[in-house]
Length: 92
Image (cartoon, rainbow, N blue to C red):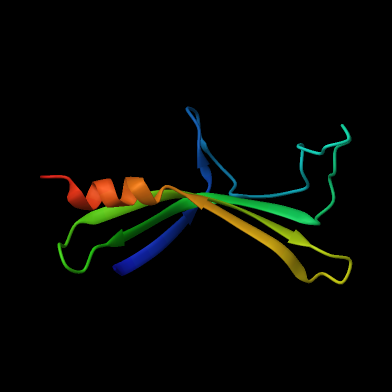
């Protein structure tokens, strides 16, 4: 892949919202954590497939967790690899 770019944010019907949020609203005990020990990042990766010259894009979401020493202790990425493969396989 070439010309790889990342655009932060979430596209909503009315705007593109910020791509970085701290805290969480998915706790198991019903409380809300507004601290920065969890950071969520949303955005879109775009690139040009070197072999075919096709432009591709994929939505991206990650959750990063930090401990009391501000060290990363957890990182989970979500993106649709099948959607990427479908874009490359599609006839123009």
